[in-house]
Image 1: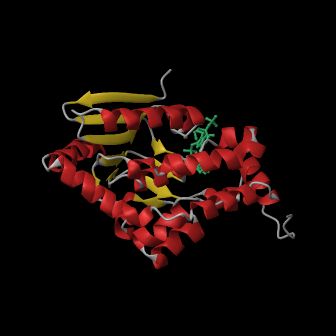
Image 2: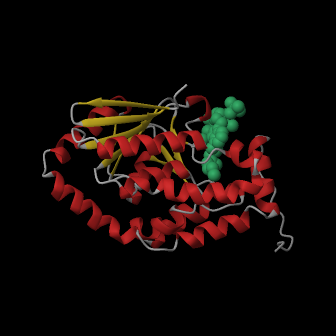
Length: 256
Ligand code: COA
């Protein structure tokens, strides 16, 4: 079954992550399919904007923890590829609107933040739970201080708290919050506003805005998680998630 549904409605394409039973976790397969869909939208002349959303209760609950757990040694390499994938909407020529229908956690939040607009359902929930797993949200820890300011970024990152849509809006993570049943209408309406503009001007504006994010500090994020994945913290955090319990992190000296 295709984990991403892709439709074109006039000049707007809609991609739906369709893996509701895993809360649209970003498995390798989902990432590969979304990469294809992003390329298709960007290279199809008739398409002027892309809406990205999820089916079921989540936009996306982030990295696929089962995949990370099943191959912990390879987790760091997977995370390297994920950093590039998660920031890929920033590098698209066409505007992308994240229509956040539910949980946007970890990589799910990072993917939404790499889009040009974030329209959220009132039922959306945002957060970066990676530290509860003993690892770090590689892209969010680089981007959030720039996007929402250091004070707010500290609260989001250092508490790993889940934010309601209203809180996310107040924090500046979200463009608009709308009733759940109006989410796609609002995303389409926003797409309509952007696609009325000169497409080359939009492309240049988008590139200019995102130039701020082209720094090379993702290497730091990659190395941080490569190191963290080898710690007992990450082993315990991931084990605890799979066993549906709270992690019990030790204060013992770190290895390595
Ligand atoms: N990767 C893989 N599977 C995931 C997942 C993820 N990121 N997030 C959720 N799932 C799976 C659950 O394991 C569960 O599977 P099961 O039915 O086989 O038990 C299913 O999706 C439904 O999730 P569940 O946890 O039962 O739903 P909930 O409503 O109780 O909780 C969340 C929802 C989002 C709070 C919870 O799923 C969660 O914390 N997910 C992990 C988020 C995260 O840490 N993301 C960053 C990863 S680095």
